[in-house]
Length: 113
Length: 117
Image 1 (tube, each protein chain N blue to C red):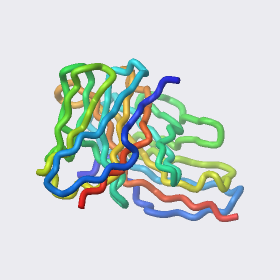
Image 2: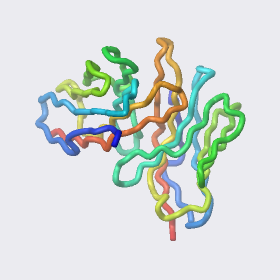
Image 3: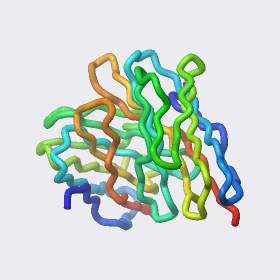
Image 4: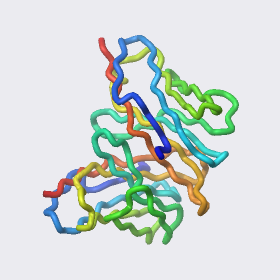
């Protein structure tokens, strides 16, 4: 079955450590997105990419980094510079047309203590 | 400025009644798209309905319809005949073009809908 896989589902890290969240899709979608979800704040866009080797900062990119070396993969690194990294992270992908919806992974819940 | 505004943090609706969830948006792109998603307590994001800025008719998908008022920049979701399984968070989202030629998708803060038996 085609879909988006985010791993792991739960992730625990100590403050000051970088951590990388995985996102893989086998839908052959060109565009991929990373969102952060906090209670009461909805989904906020971190980074997005429309083609391999190209990505754009979203609304809250500070403290995060991404890469897009392969079409199917869009890993997100939460760096130690991110002041409040504990959150639910959602990855999504979409084919090219404007009317195509985002397909989401099941998310990774990151807890940093 | 908020691109997508959902002013109802929480809503209650009686089972079998209809409910309207509000969404207003702001964009300078003449060609944009509006989406609604449902997020149950399990956390998955479920696509419900889409409305394009040039679509002449309001979108409908089963019990979901989108009340699109372009001049007012509103895209309200109407759920008819509410069911207990409709209890969830609902997010409005907009896809718009950026000055660099990219397509950005932003979400509102969501509305938590609770259906009462």
